[in-house]
Image 1 (spheres, helix red, strand yellow):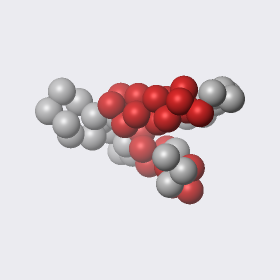
Image 2 (cartoon, one colour; image 1 turned 90 degrees about the horizontal axis):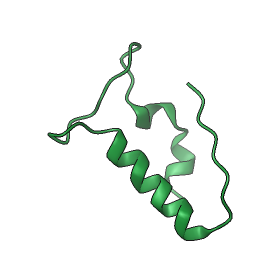
Image 3 (cartoon, one colour; image 1 turned 180 degrees about the horizontal axis):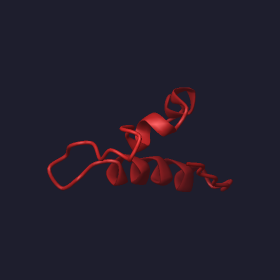
Length: 52
């Protein structure tokens, strides 16, 4: 799974990270797992998540 995004607007970047978190959870707030047993958040390098 590869996800690419580019935007120079700092607000758009923060909204994209919020959207990532919301899409990684189901309606009950539990993580959604892919066929490999990983969540969407596990597919994204953790060093990038600290920049929010």
